[in-house]
Image (cartoon, rainbow over all chains, first blue to last red; front, side, top):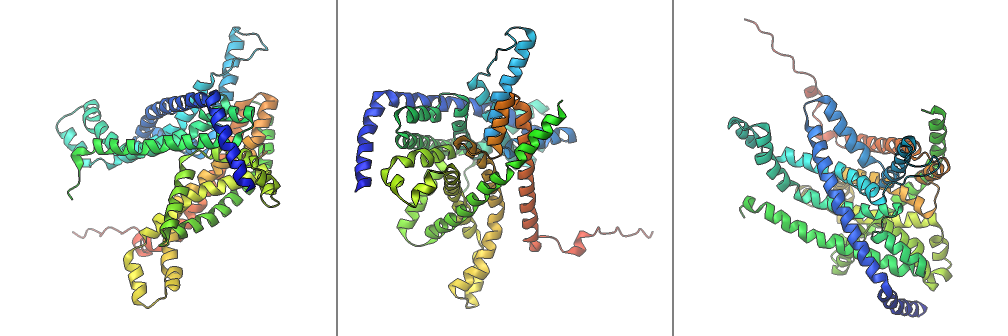
Length: 248
Length: 243
């Protein structure tokens, strides 16, 4: 019974607190989380395709670089990479600014928290995307590449007309998984002070002493974001593979 | 390059390795127990069990582990009945236990899906053969389904274990001084984050690479039937040209 009374109190204060302005704050948090995720995915797509190309290269040196990239950034704790970019970025920026004399010798030039966080999450996302792109490239029918070559297509034309459309089509399900991972990783950049959903929930929990409420709301909002993206990616998959339906 | 600084940092972080491994081990062990239960519920014929596991997997895979950790560590203590419970309170007031609970609950969701997939991938012919031999359901499970399913689950399971190693670093945000927490402290004391985090990064990477190596070895040992027979492995000598 004590439990039920507790719960009733929680629900009635929940409405008051959310209406008092924390609700709007949390919505802004969602906006920032989505911004971080989208920008990180784009950084990751750029890096990931380069790394995938390196891993598929005939040159041993490039292959080694690609392998090391995916091993390191998939093998390290995400938190460590985020700290490395945020605090390490601050260390580098401060060092450069002090030596050029643009700040005093005791001042500190902080890494912009959004930039640091997005770079870190983007680089992690890039490691996973590289594997997705590599797998999709390997799944392209060899004959298509040979045919393109036999037509006398240049490497760029082959890339643009044969490789990219097919890799993108085959990569959609894998990219959906990376998107989910990236949404969840974006919660970690709250440690650098980006006012995304996790940090907003944290602030709300600390200043109102209603941690249960705000962390539950944050958890539900994350669930909403991840579950909304599933049908979207399914739709994208259907759209991109509309000319490749298997005979029933 | 301050070589001594690297060495002393490396040593300080390494001293926290046992704590990291402790969180890792208990998280995985309890996670395995919960995952087994979930898989069993999911495989049973009860609709209710299926709905429960579906909801469980949805919740724990769809939200970040950090939220789950905060919810357990900060959130649950809000309930009076938790604070007054002689069993729950000693567990939920300790950040160490909370991390282990959060990790176990989280990994159980992923593992139960891995095990479910592995069980479904056991070839039907093997089970039919076992039935034809007159094996009881339990014998069939013990001697046919389980060994094959475990072997099939191994690659995905090893990935999950490596994700768990990475997840132990989250313990540092609830004040545990494991490797990440120690690295954070040294970094704040010395203002040399790049050097300190590189040291910690090397240790995490070596740890993960050795775990991957161990799993690769186990996988190799468990799949002799997939390897070519020894005589084929020797290079076939070209037939000497006679004419």
